[in-house]
Image 1 (cartoon, one colour):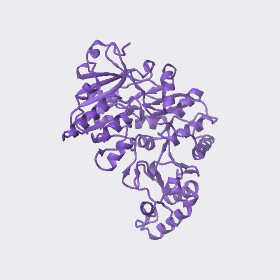
Image 2 (spheres, rainbow, N blue to C red):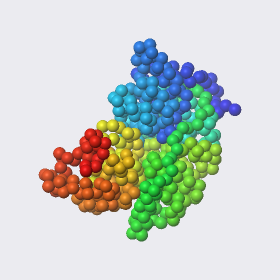
Image 3 (cartoon, one colour):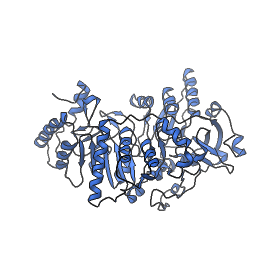
Image 4 (spheres, rainbow, N blue to C red):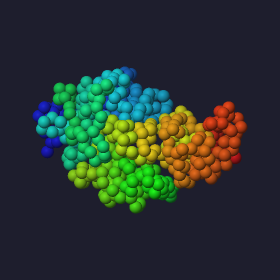
Length: 504
């Protein structure tokens, strides 16, 4: 049975190849998709094929690629492999897309996820020529049932000149009711009003997306699952990091700074963040809530156990097994999970007012608490800042987690100075590695250096860090935040030259 219940949309059904023909060289295209969920499966591949054919004829074909966040090989991977990307925003994680960004053949703007909708609506990035949006179904009154992510779909549908819809019958029809699409926030300053959301379980919008039928030029029917990467099995480092965080929560509860059921939790994307959620599953904490951007495997387990009563986000970020599990049981999860537009899920005022506890991954931190979450060795983009800045700057407790070393111990994740700053010392309340937790609240820079080195650095690098501090205090032109500028990046330089940060 067709998922398209409106005759006006049924009359526009065509193949992915026909739909792709509406995308031309030089256009900007807004795709649905957020952390490998809810992205279009067929049309991007057809656009990539179109680009290859143009290049074979010696003709130009590159487009601007706008999404909610990262997508999957059928979108970012296919377009990057076809050399079809001129400019990309706001977050990506595909290896082929990353390679194009780092070899200079594609431009990339790393944008806070809470800012994207306003930037698009205000025209900061220029006109949006086409939106390609995956949906679960089209209702009889012509509205769209979102699929496994919401992201920037509301904004792309409103601002695009032309719209292509992919109706994916793999996505469960029982997703209807899981989404909470708030439209009043789409009003631009100075006419915005406060968002009437006070707790993660509040529903303030509608369950469907609005669309102008006259702008829809194509509807493509698909039947394909979301494609996500399995999480790694929990290792001892991950378990240790989770344990340190739980000990920290215990202390904060004892001090009266957190209630017995904590405060709404946010967890970043990735294996370590998912391990922290797994740690909560074995903890004493009950009646937890989550106000985050992505719903990961660990969060599904917490919902199944009853330890988490509601999880609010904008998308799933699930292993293939968990994605099928959620899709097969969507009727159950739609009462436990709320998916919102990302300018709501990541809204700074909502994060601040609810007292969200933020926990995100990082590439490295320095001895003063500055954090790099995007760049490797100064110049190479990894994935992007995503929503980590939204939650870190505005969280009640904001911290970062990572193993203390990388590349088999050749890289220390605690360094004298980070090679790129995404989150300043002013926004970092705590750091955690498998070695321990550094509580940085109320400490001056030199005090933070002592605590970070002692609690978070790997033993192989502690003395090397202490030697740097002694040198910095001797050479710096001030004692507040001592740095020896001539050697602040010597660890990174040494790694690039010798394959290790170890100086001896």
